[in-house]
Amino acid sequence: KNQVEQSPQSLIILEGKNCTLQCNYTVSPFSNLRWYKQDTGRGPVSLTIMTFSENTKSNGRYTATLDADTKQSSLHITASQLSDSASYICVVSDRGSTLGRLYFGRGTQLTVWP
Amino acid sequence: EADIYQTPRYLVIGTGKKITLECSQTMGHDKMYWYQQDPGMELHLIHYSYGVNSTEKGDLSSESTVSRIRTEHFPLTLESARPSHTSQYLCASSVDGSSYNEQFFGPGTRLTVL
Image 1 (tube, each protein chain N blue to C red):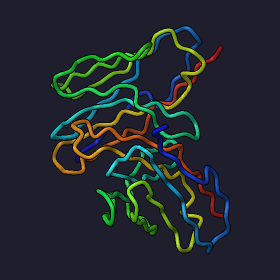
Image 2: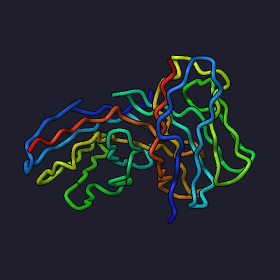
Image 3: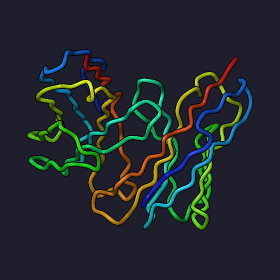
Image 4: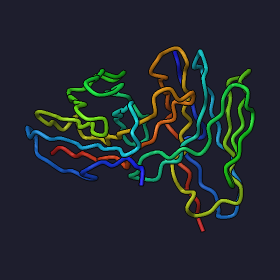
């Protein structure tokens, strides 16, 4: 069964600190993995997308890593800001269908305190 | 500006009412999707469309229906709303033929059925 598991479920950090969110997946055949940021009451917004051959990708203070062998990914946030408070969703796409189906994790709810 | 729009953003209605959730995109994308998301849970695909006059049911069974008469418009209809339909509904679109199948999400409609 294709699944995406994220940890921790929730995380509270102080402004300026770094944090790392984890994602494990069993989706096969694998196409790509992306991290989305979803603010409360809003739609998800893409942060990074990585294919099988990419093991790291950055977008400003966000750095994602991918280990396709162990089927693990992480999202590292540097120097957190209050605006980083959101749910971070790991999404894996398979290449076994014309639709390019997406498998969503439940997200990590990050809260940044001043 | 190319974007994806959803209206209304919030809707509170009584049981038995017929409702239509609107979704429009100005990016010229062929593929469009509807997802359902409950608090703290992953997104579930309920409908998708490859293009005009194409509609398919997703992974999660839903009593809603969709139509795709124009490329840019993908409305979702509930003939008789029930409290079990209370949820957030997210519309998304993607360009056909993209290797990433990156989906762009609208802001969502939060539906509450009393």
